[in-house]
Image 1: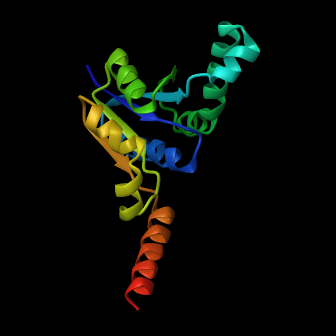
Image 2: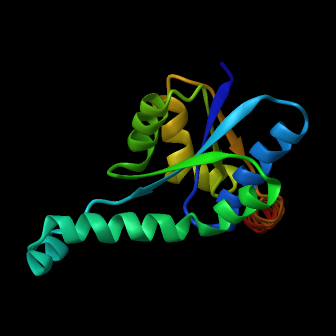
Length: 163
């Protein structure tokens, strides 16, 4: 039995970094299969009142989730790696954990939001919540461009305060 890796995908460049990281692990010899997962927020009260059709809302969430995974699917297709997809609805971190458990994943990979250390400490993030909630190891993949810009911005901000 090989390892199954869940990759959290939200359609952003940062989540594509997570896909690239997982593909690099496979290309370096790791034997694993992939599961792309996306989580939609639950419908708002307004959406439920206007639609009045829970099946329509569920279909729209599934379609939106599949659309947001398109770029990630393209990367994996280009690499010729088999994978599964799943779209969930709910709290992002806990729904990703539920998907990982249901799919039998032994590892989760997620892109970092790119906040600097100060912003992350104040704001929290899905990736940090996922690390706390997950029963399996979680890899948070940093986005090099956002990281460099964030660190430079924080350094400049601290220099201005100390001047």
